Figure 1 (cartoon, helix red, strand yellow):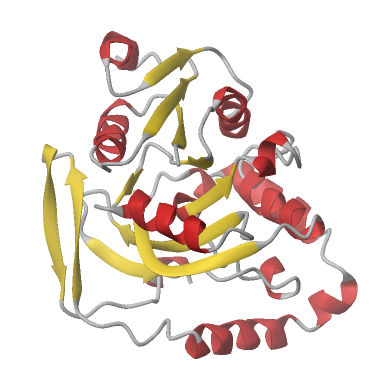
Figure 2 (cartoon, rainbow, N blue to C red; figure 1 turned 60 degrees about the vertical axis):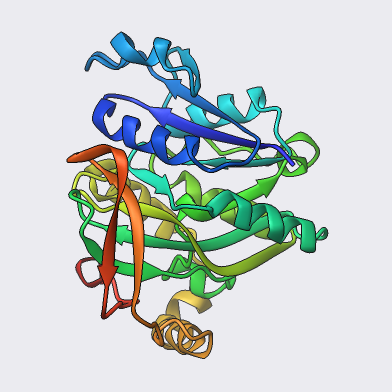
Length: 277
């Protein structure tokens, strides 16, 4: 089972180096495709010489166009995309491989991510859940750093990202998966980390505009019952054990340690992302 990991890149040189390191040490058969939109921050000085990736330098129309380009080039059995400010945790892809081998009917795997700050310090754990068609409009239960798909989602179903959406492409892609009844499964394992730097795309003005546009698509009866769906979502998380976390640790690359993973102990983990409430 071969993996194809796609990383869209634009002016994220320092973060990209950490991302590449976290993919390269996974110990499974893989290719790492970096789609760089002609960055002018020095990325072009070193990325062409980075033997651990296949680098492509070409202007795109945004992150999701870059991911689509990578998916079209991919040769793996399992595909995923990992942003520059995200990493895979040790052994993540072996865990994903085992899951797909044991669950041949599942086409999309949703796993968990650990959220850190820009220095790698712990913020919270985020489990995934199969999205509920009512809850999803108010609570998106997935981080894309921990989504893995079988090749057929792209090659046969042709479910690519809609590049109309520059910031909310993930949300609308998940809606497309749901509309097409693509079989999804969930792993309680944590495969990835996401750095909440305060500069993430979904915090910027265009993302807010797209959110407003997306809200107009919510069916009236679903919008009317919003408080019910939010409570139901939280009860669903509780039923899945998301708030019953035990002491743990994780190992990631940081800007202070770009060549060796640093282990961070988490004596009191939380599932609550306080600054995104």
